[in-house]
Amino acid sequence: MCCTEKLNSTQQLNYSKDIRD
Image 1 (cartoon, rainbow, N blue to C red):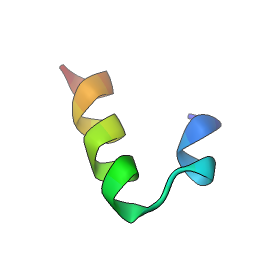
Image 2: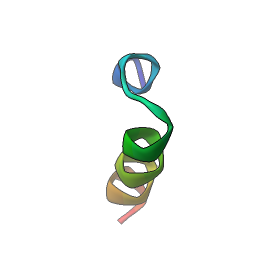
Image 3: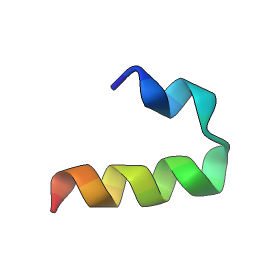
């Protein structure tokens, strides 16, 4: 999950949802 640090709060939430699905 290296990429989450580069994203802002909104993008982090969307990214988290994507990897879970």
